[in-house]
Length: 119
Length: 114
Image (cartoon, rainbow over all chains, first blue to last red):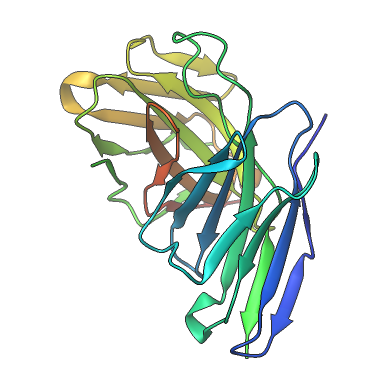
C-alpha cells in the first residue's frame, strides 16, 4: 500500500540553525500538509499546500517557517532559525483530490514523522 | 472556528471490556468532516474513519463502531471486547470544507490491561 515517507526520522539541531524536513507524499495525492506534535500533546496543524501554494496556515506557522515542493515528489518544511520550542514530532500528510462535493475532504494519510530535537 | 474536545485524558480497561471514547466538536460550518486516528506507542498516526456532516449513519467495522450525533455535536468511538493491542492514544479530528486542514482533540490515552 502506498505511504507517505518522511526523512530523517530523527533530526538533532543546534538552536539558531536552519533545518529542512523532507516528505514524499503518496504519488497521486494533490493536497499536502504539515502538522507538529510537541511531546505528550495534541497534533497541531501548521500548513496546507495545494497547486504549488499555501492554502491555509495556522498561527504557529510564522515567518520562520516555509514550505516548498521543489520537484514532483518532495514536499519540504524549512525552519529558518530554530528555537528550543520547535522541538517536536513533525508529521507530513497528504490526501487525494476532491472528486465531487459529496466526496468531501479525503482522509489524510500521515508519514511516520520526524522527531526534531533542538539543543 | 473549529474545536474538538476529548474530555477523557486517560482510560484504563481490562481486556475484553467494551470502552467508549468521547468526542465533542464545535464548528460554524454546515459541511464538515470528522475523523478518528490511532497513535500507537510507536508514534505513527493511523487513519481509522472519516464521517461527513451530512451522513449521520453509524458505522461498525469489526470491533470498532462510531456513533455520530449532530444534535449533540458528538462523534463517539466504541471498541468492543478490547484487546491489549488497542492500547494507544486516540485522536478525534475535525476539518471544515476546503482546504481541509484538521484540528485535533487533545487525545485519549487508552490502556488495555491483560
